[in-house]
Amino acid sequence: MELDQYNDPSVIGDCSAPVRVNRKSKPDPTIVDVNGLRFGSAKVVTIAGPCSVENHEQLMETAKAVKAAGGVILRGGAFKPRSSPYNFQGLGEEGLKLLREARNEIGLPIVTEVMDTRLVELVAGYADIIQIGSRNMQNYPLLKEVGMLRKPVLLKRGMMASIEEFLLAAEYILNQGNDQIILCERGIRTFETSTRNTLDLSAVPMLKHLSHLPVIVDPSHGTGHRWMVPAMAKAAIAAGADGLIIEVHYKPEEALCDGQQSLSPDEFTRLMSDLKKVAQAIGRDIY
Ligand code: PEP
Ligand code: MN
Image (tube, rainbow, N blue to C red; front, top):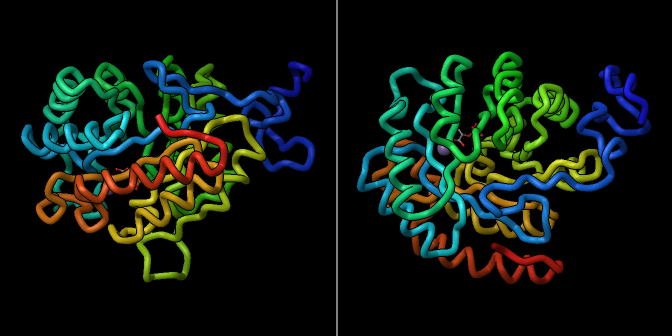
């Protein structure tokens, strides 16, 4: 592809994907490497952990349970984008310090969200993967800022974003030179009210068709119901997802955030063994 085409943000071919994220400009899949865990390889990567970091015991106990069940990356929000300003907003830097402690003691890399351009450097100092949440998928200054990092970015689909808008958001990051981007389908808003969001699993093959970037699925925010998470996690692997991000809490009934969609350690353990079978059925495996 000619270099000047890279400056053209319009679609190419029959694909509604901008040039840099477009598979046509890079036929080989992009592998996002997190301490040797390769998103986009034959192996499926499972990220799990609490919605938010609440305290030392909660994070350590949950992290141990995630690791014991076979989860390979720990999630946990320190800066939380809550719909209500009166809800728990996260522990901030204190939460980042707890994540670092869990990382060092339990040995799992961590993913955590950044919401503010002023905090990118701080969060990047703690995280192995920087998360851009659904609400910030079109925060272009933030996308540019994480694009300047040389660190993996987990980009969640905006709850009202089309596939094209999602890929354009990834293009902002790529344009700054950072190609270590993991796309995450986490459900979109539709007329349906029985689930928190409508998990668009058709986004998985579509994103992989249009782009070379790895794609993971969040069945927790995608459904909002603990009991639905295993079914949709298995379906996501069957649909070709390169990984999953799942909310797990050592005591879901006591969680300060998203307990209703968080798996208990036992539920997560059972799910991991089922996921392995689904992955193997389609010629893949799980880390
Ligand atoms: C999260 O993963 O903690 C989160 C807030 O998800 P989303 O941005 O998809 O709502
Ligand atoms: Mn959550």
